[in-house]
Amino acid sequence: MSDARAHRVLDAAGELMVALGYRKVTIADVAARAGVGKGTVYLHWPSKLELFGAVLVREGVAVGREHVAALRADPEHVVLHRTMRDSFLVIMRRPLARALYTGDAGLLGALASDTKIGRSVVGESAAHRARHLGLLYRHGLLADDPATDPTLYYRLAAATLGFFLGDELAGGAELSARADALALVVRRAFEPADLPTGDALAVAAAEVDAHYSGLLDEMGRSLPESPQEGS
Image (cartoon, rainbow, N blue to C red; front, side, top):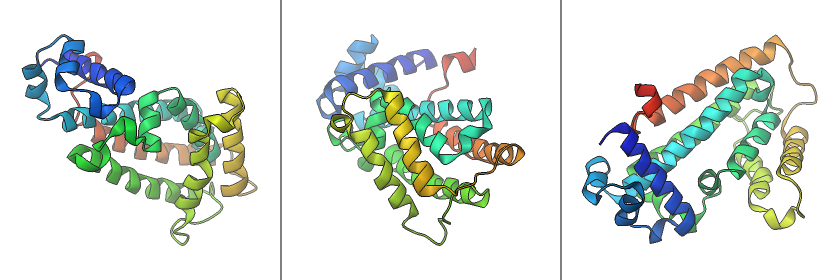
């Protein structure tokens, strides 16, 4: 299958998963929407689980690329409350990313737990979180050391996940206002009173960029090459 056709299949699978949920979508549905035969889909992905696992990996890579682009445009995005604000806006505007971040069982089915690619993403994400928080602490961007506080990530997740799940609590507030509120919680609860500035932030941003880029490159190896990359 050509790379362009493979991405068309992934597009179709993602659209159908958002519309119907993983369990209700069949390979025949995906093939019909992508304009290819079922056998063509199976040539590239041996099962429905692996196909939709690839959909989620591609979505995770796309979200990560947006974060890296923001970081390169302005090193201040390395600060955790800025990172979380950026992530909130990106994820809430992408239904698949939101499902992946919040563990939406209806949309995802058993993808995260029952596929090799899904388990790999989950494991890589957990390892990434630990390294990312440790890097931030070393650069004076976190108040608490994740190496000596095993509850740090739990506290961070518990304090922030509600912003992604709590549409009914938002009272109609715009996404940007909700993102600001999330940033305020992270700033006050997890960061030191005085944050580094200038060159110190640039150094930290370069390290986070290298870490993210390596992770994204590793995740992307399981995907077909983007058509524009092969041109």
